[in-house]
Image (cartoon, rainbow, N blue to C red):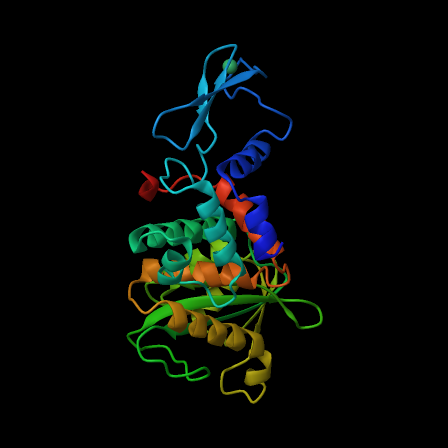
Length: 300
Ligand SMILES: [Zn+2]
C-alpha cells in the first residue's frame, strides 16, 4: 500500500477502530470474560476520551479496543499513530523523531515516545525468531569514532555488538540479528547466542573462544576461518556488509550513547532488514505487531 492508499484506508478514527476490532475479533465480538462468551455488546463513548469501550450485554464486562495494543490510553489520534507506523516501517533510512514531529504535527516529546514504542514493538517481533541453518557470526564495535568497515578489533572502549547473518544455500543473506552486549566475555555472548540462534546449525566464525563455546553448547558444526586467512574477506562478506549498513543507519539517525537505546535502533535496523523484500507490505506487518504488543510501562 502506498502512502496515499494508507491515509485513505486509515483516514479517520472510525477506520482505525474498525481495523482494531477486526484484528481482535475476526469472527465478531466475543466477551473475554471466562465462562461468558457473550457475542452481543454495547459501545460506550466517554467524554474527553478517544477510546471506546465495548460492554458485554450478558455479563456487563467492559473491554477497551486498545487494551493490549500500543495505543492503549494514548492521547494521540489513531490515524496519526497509524501514519507514524507507516513512515517508520517504510522509510529505509529510518525516520527520526524530529521528522515525525514535523510530519505528524505533534510535539517532539510525543513523536519521540511514539517512535520509541514502535521500536519496542519491532524488538518484540524480532525476539520471536531465531537464525537457523548456515549462520555467520562476528562482532563489531559501534559508537564513538568510526574506524570504517573492516577495521574492527576486540579491545577498544566502544560498545561491542554481536552480529549473526543466516545464509541461503546459494550464499545469499536471509536474516540477521545484532545485539549490543556489555562485553565480549563468554557469559553475555552465550546468552545472546542462546536467544538468537537455533540449535544444530552450521556456524562460521573467526574461531574466537566465545563462538567455539557457543557452537559446542548449540551442537553446531563450527567452521573456522581466521581473520588473517586470505579467504576471510570473502567468507565474512555478508556479516561485514551488515555491520557496515547498520553503522551507517545508526550514525545517520542516532548520535547519543547508551547500550539500551542503541539496541532499540539495532532492533529497528534488524526488523527492516529482515523484511527488506516486503515492499510497503512491511507497514501492514508492523501495524499488526503494534496491535499485538503488550503496552510498555512508558504507555501509562
Ligand atoms: Zn460477558
